[in-house]
Amino acid sequence: MFTQIPINTLNRSVFNQISKKEINRLKKATKSFVANTTVFNQLLSYENYPINKKLAITNILEFLEYVDIKLQKSYDAKIKIPKSVFENYFTSHHYISYQEIFAKLNIIKVTTHPDGSFYTCNWKDKEGPVVKAKCKIYQVSYNYMNMKALSLIIPDQKKKILPISNELKWLDKRFVKTIEKVQINLLAAFNDEITEFRTGNINFNQLKCRLHRILQLQRRRKIKKGKNVNRIYHSLTNISKISRKHLNIPFIFLDVKNCQPLLLCALMIKDGHDFDLEYRLDCEWAFFYDQFKCFGNNDKGTTKRLLYRHVFFGFKPNKKINQHFKKLYPATWEYLHQLSKTDISLASKLQNLESELFNVLIPAESKHFFTLFDAIYFDDVRDAAELECNITKFFDDLGLEVAVEHGIN
Image (cartoon, rainbow, N blue to C red; front, side, top):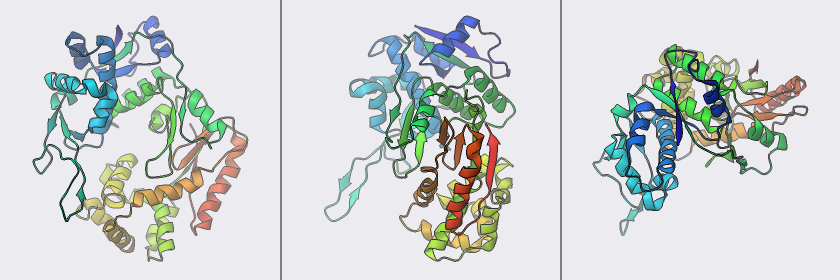
């Protein structure tokens, strides 16, 4: 029914004790999962499933991927899960039975909103506006979150080729082909991600999510546009920088430094709003995030998340990082403060402006390429100069200078 392979997160060479047969099975699998070992063993022992046991456990493993990924944005282990999500994983006929399984195994259970309600439907007073429904909130048990033993789970399966799901029919065929065909060295990527965890650069939940993303490449390939923005999302979007080093195509990349903070300057210029010269120069010269590195314990990724969460996209004036921003760039802070009082989505405005460049940035010579928000990956060095020229011209037309990072993936 399943092959279970323990993962040793205390040792970088995680696959040393695995047989060649198991390694070959993993490489050939079109569907495999990372799961908490105890939870998986509980699922194997459970008998009262509403459908075939193997299929039920597989559905649960996919759903737990969703839960782990949602947890990354939660501070209290509570996550909103709409009914439609349960129906998507378990069907409208059986999702309640699965919810009962999660409660029995102490994985998740429904909890209250801050106002004490469990959920509400759309409703309207006779004279008032429609009040939007609130979906249920689920508490993820700390028992589940504190399980540190992991296993690779490979269901018995027949080889199956899954076609790519591409919503953007206008995309360059080479872009589509790259997302469809690129492969990743699973063993090397797993080993390096576990090293990141062991050295303290990521926490345990982040490790699980990174491993989930790697394995998702085995069973689905997709390209789509964002719900409210023109950004392109695809199967490599959430693969970490660590894992991207192990793609089977050697990519060159160009990355716009401090891109979204810099694009904010363009919005302020367009709106005729005063901004701080220091802010503009820090963004143009790519020093902006350095001004806040103490808030992210010198980790740029953490610093960026805090700035986006508390200043740019979730303006919280009482947060220390927000107050530091105000001290450094008072005029820019005032623009963000006024914008936060409106219904305008700054994230959408910045990301759509970013997309105006990267959605049409196409290398002439490369056989494979893809964009990754504010970066482009390609495989022919002859394209580098022209691509950088196009990036520079885009920002020059906005009245800005730009710093571009070059690298080899």
